[in-house]
Length: 493
Image 1 (cartoon, one colour):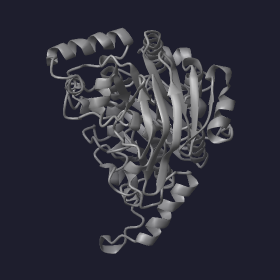
Image 2 (cartoon, one colour):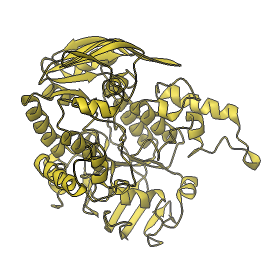
Image 3 (cartoon, one colour):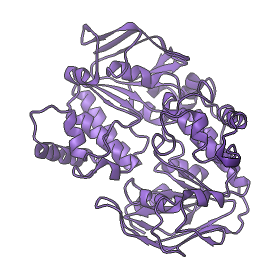
Image 4 (tube, helix red, strand yellow):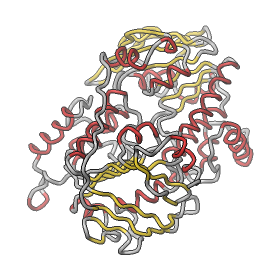
């Protein structure tokens, strides 16, 4: 179906792809595996026509092709789900999907098709909802539905399950296997090794822009795939019991009406977060996580004045800057646009939440800011050309490492972090989780919101579940089971 021959793509400071060659057969699910910054996403964008290669040839269905843009790729039968979403926030779900389907369909027909696909594949989404009102998980569903509606012959998926629940992942895998049986070829990027082993027929491994090997993933273990990808197995986490201190963040009967018609009302939310503990919040995307995080970070200040108490002080009406001054730091789920300004350098992005380098009269002290940024790049192994690199030039996983590092390096008293390892490789995920545990052992109170149950069971001391804007009682990690949490995710507590 597809043959890539000697593809090279160079940027001013990095060679993203270096003489890459691979073949994908008809009806094959082909994994591309590599650590963050290995060149996987660049290669997929070249196939999809979003990036032009400097050298090499693409042969598609036996014909040498030059794919000038994504529109031409779709015309050839190639669809792609991006890791960083390509959606217009001011348009509805249906309007976004409509843009890629041509002019022959009416909007009402597109809405009907979306509902059909959503019901058939378990990708619940409202076609009339504006994209800006959707969570990251819901946006991921929109991207997948849009790709499936194009009825592709070659489907490219870049981290498609990074913010999907285990139930949604299982349903998606049934869909992908059915598509492959019907002759659709699938290129699949994921850092979740168990997914690749259970789903994919063949796996091509990339490192530093080059193909370094190929294997049949079902014959490999997670450990052997890790060694192929990063040259070693990630260090195991040590989750030891830790003495908790006083309550530093208290949420008391927090109720908030949704800000828009597609949001979720929060009802009587109660949280008590203590020094030296990690509280994990699980839930299916779109059940009030976004509204809760806005209220806790200070982006939504409508709550009753005594409903959010930080270190003994009522903060419900304080904005993010004042809450940071009291020791609360926050890592949002959206990396680009909320966690970082894409066009600004990493050094300038430091100033969004870290003001130590701003001197008298607002002057920026460049040398300490440069050193501070370089320290985070080094300690979190961020692959970037340096502190002056634009945020948009980093791979998704490397930008995630930088943002997590920026907030952990601030030594907060309370850290709220959403989807901490979204789109990062196994080595980086282990490092981020280890840093979160180290922060907790230094008596920081950590609140982790994640849709990845394995992650929550690995690092949390207690777990709560959010469903339809309501929060379950907490259960200790020792007493929690995936069956129990799964039932609670449906509101059955």
